[in-house]
Structure formats: structure tokens, C-alpha cells
Image (cartoon, rainbow, N blue to C red; front, side, top):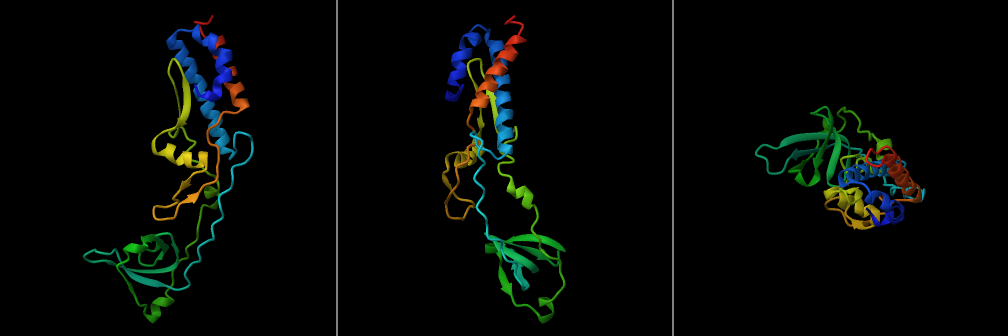
Length: 225
């Protein structure tokens, strides 16, 4: 178990040692699942283990849509690059996103893959097109939506320990917020320091939850009875 569970280990150690390894593994797995659900729910509430809210994201200055049309060939290096006429666009990072008149919808293009910028004809400047409107502001507000699901926030046990945590690349991403580390928000962006947001840390309530879970499962264990 984690060092954070030392108190529970002292209380429950004698009970666990009296159980056969297979049954002990089953109980520890159930305890890990209980803790996984509790931690996932807390992350969903956007709270640190002490009940304080996660530090909010830094507010971004919204990109200003271009008030003129652009015309270019895309992509660079293609035998016959496509002619793109775009209106109501924004340049954000390495992407140019806007209403592609020929495609009849919102499209994104890599800025550095534009083959050549072309001059506009007089009738193209005012050519009708839809407007690019940014969507999903509510969705962007909630942090760590994917990190807290069962595929990324994992739980497991052996006959000696129970654990929860993140694995692989997800673990690297989570540790940036967990420890308040420096990282690049995008591949070509400058490193920035992220606010510290505790994703995994067992608090007193969860310590009690684990002990209650242990006693509950032991009370229904055939080997314990």
C-alpha cells in the first residue's frame, strides 16, 4: 500500500495477515476500487484533497478573427496544391482555422505548410461565407476529464498491496499538475509552469473509507467467518 495508508496498515495489518493470500488479494482489490472511485469523484469536483478548488486555468486572450479573406495554396510540396479561399479565420498556434468557402465548412490548416499566399480578386474579398464561432466553452472549463476515467486512473492489488495511479504517458501528464512542474503547452511553445493541482493524495476521509471497506468485506468473507 501507499505510505499514506500507514495508519490503516497498523490497524488492519493483523486482520489481513490472518487471511489466505487469494482472499487477501480480493479484499485489497476491492479497497483499491473504492479509493479509485473516490479520487475520480474528487477530481470531477475539481477539488484538492483538502477541499480547496483546483487553481483555475489562466485566461487566454481570445484570438481575433481576421476581418479580411485570405487565399493560399496548400499544402507545401504537393504536386498540385489546393487553392483555399478562407474567411472569418483565426491564427492560433501553428493552425489557421476558419470558414473554407470551397469546402463549405470550418477547416484547419498548418500555417507552416502553406505553399504560397495569393492576392485576392476584388469579388473574393466580399464573397459570402459562414462565420467561425468557437464552441465548447463549458467543456473546456472542466479539467482532467479524461485523466479521471477508469482507463487512465487505474487501480490494482496483489496479495500484499493495493494501489491506484496513472500509467504510461498519462502519468507524465498528470505529474506536471501533481507537482506543479514546467512543461510545453504545445510542441513548439515555450515551457510554462503549471499550477499545482493534487490529483492523487489520500485524505482523512478516504483513510476512513478504506478502513470501513476492509471491515465490511471482512464481515462478509467466508474465510473470516
